[in-house]
Image (cartoon, rainbow, N blue to C red):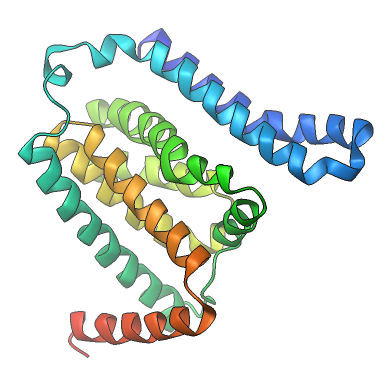
Length: 237
């Protein structure tokens, strides 16, 4: 694995860990504004990490296979298809978690993101844009890509997806994160363009943020009921 890939991983890890350190610092200096300071620091650290990662990944972005126009018909087509694939995989994962494993619906990670976005709307750029780029570069381009060269698709996708799920801190929903990881890995292998899983990841996160922020609770409940009906149709129930 190229040395720059290790620096990308280190940058991502430092970004994730630095939040806790700065929260302690902010708490001792401006305890009354700890929430706001933490949110703005998160925005700053994610943007800084993205800039560093893009600089480190510049050799990959200038290769002949990535110099073409990003938004070709292939990229657009697979991105649209990828969204439907991701929702389908997620629907089956949710069905298994709820009906077989007895795991309650709901994500603390998602609710935390929504709460932070409601507090400071600018925070939305992290889940909608920055995080998908960083996560796909780290988990698909680097982790999955490096493992795929040495193993097969299933092992590489599984291991990278498990790490992807662990990073999100919701072990109980590991099946959902793993299913997403498999879809993103498939899109990357099929198109050989990391921009495709990045776009799909962005769209999924943006839709989730928008739905949770702007739809009233009664509409969310109706959507969940429709989703359950669709799941039953898809599995032939």
